[in-house]
Amino acid sequence: MAYVVGALFAAAIYMMLRRSIVKLVIGLMLLTNAANLLVFVVAGMTRGAPPLIAEGASVPGALVADPLPQALILTAIVIAFGVLAFSVVLIHRAYEVVGTDDLDQMKDTDT
Amino acid sequence: MRLELLLPIILPLFAGALSLALWRSLWLQRALAVVMTLAMTLAGAWLLHSVSGEGYLVTDMGGWEAPFGITLVADIMAAIMVLMTGVMGLIVTVYSLGSIPEGHERFGYYPLMHLLLAGVAGAFLTGDIFNLFVWFEVLLLASFALMTLGGERAQMEGAIKYVTLNLFASAIFLSAVGITYGMLGTLNMADIAQKVGQLEPEDTGMITVVAMMYMVAFGIKAAAFPLFFWLPASYHTPPVAVSALFAALLTKVGVYALFRFFTLIFDQDVSYTHGIMLWAGALGMLAGVLGAAAQFEFRRILAFHSVSQIGYMIVALALMSPLAILGGIFYIVHHMIVKSALFLVSGVTYRLMGSHELKDLGGFYKHRPGLAVLFLIQALALAGIPPLFGFFAKFAVIRAGIEAGEFVVAGVGLLVGLLTLYSMIKIWAEVFWKKVPDHVTDTDRLTGVVADSSIWLLYLPLILMAIATVALGLFGQPFYTLVEAGAHQLLNPEGYIEAVLGRGE
Image (spheres, rainbow over the protein chains, first blue to last red):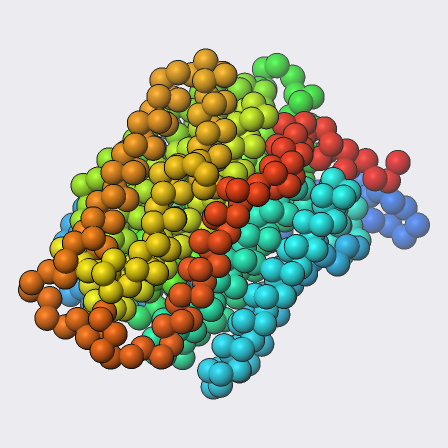
């Protein structure tokens, strides 16, 4: 899994460094997925029972899977989806307004 | 459950939802925006009052005890920030009433602004790193939409850079959160701080790596050197009220997060992490001010100056002495007021002469002496002329630098103060003192031939901010005492940890 994460990060950075804004967005997409998977991997994937606590007890009995990373990733996926939807609309509008999809041409606001 | 801790977050969230429901009625949206930002200011003042009495306010959301649930924590710095968020929200709202084009208002300007304020207040108050990430995303999404509202070419180009770099920062932040959780098994800031202190020596290298990831992520959001490139490319593109709100709040959230993390959690390897920040801050000061010197567009000058001012704050954090932290908090408050006021002045000049280019502006001292005074107060405060508020902020940071033996950095700070004055005088000479340029024919608005009925809405916030700048400089003792206590809290994180974790025993 660690190699997958590394490859995803590398691919994302490579895509973000390309000149086309579409590839920029693909890069962003890969980047968020890479970060999500990273959370999953480093938090320690364990194969265990569902994290349910028996009635009356205050700690779970047997080895249970840690539910927290999944909750984090679920939140992060939702956020990433919203942001991604926004960026897709943004590049579409930018393409209409600016008339190019080449990032090198978009330097009116640079100094 | 402390109500004052929740109100600054809940009020704008609620207002955002309500203004969405009132989509068709602009008048109700406007009234709601004024009322809600006023209420948020009052809630912030209440919070600050409680915090200054009790030290820390802590509430576990949903009744899940720390470190398991999400905890909201307010110390003095956070409370000051929340109060300033409310004040800035109110000021910008009043200014927006008179300046935002109706088309923007119809496309959800007010709901977005409420969500932005909610995100900012949440980021200031949370005591949980993943929750901080979520609030960051809330405010980022609102700011993306605010920045692109209107859809002009420059806005689109600026927004692409802004969105890309901020999402990149978010990805780094999320990765850092994941690694932190993997190492320590907790997301609560106080718990992390405690566990980092108990780590085995061979793990401290990894902690430094994580610290650097946080530094890069927050550095991008705070526009610290050398990660500031999105700021001058994007801050001058949206309507001026939005620029002012961004300049007041967005970079400060990054700076606040840096202050929080690098006083509470990552204070083991100070010579390494804070050494990097010291030089990043010093170079940021210099790079920002030199960038501003090369600009001849009102708002771009101000945007570059933000980079330079952020440098002062980072230097203050890097020095890590009580005086420096105090100066840092002073500087944040000072910059929130002054920079947004200057942006708002540029909005008035644009409205009267229809341009942001210095060469197309002129004659304001003759025709609008009141505006000239309002500008001059803020410009001199930015450059650090006594007895204005900015002087004390700058004085504290530079004095702390000299006390710490960092003479080069202190010297850079002084030099940058001088260069700041140069940029401000450039604006003063071009916009206010110069005669109306010959090629400008449409001066009816400037000379008052065409009456502008709603311009008092633009002046009112400026007058309030000028009063604040002067008053905080002349009668700053109570504020100084308060911030001194806040700096003491930041430098002694045991109190924070105790307040969050030690309640049950």
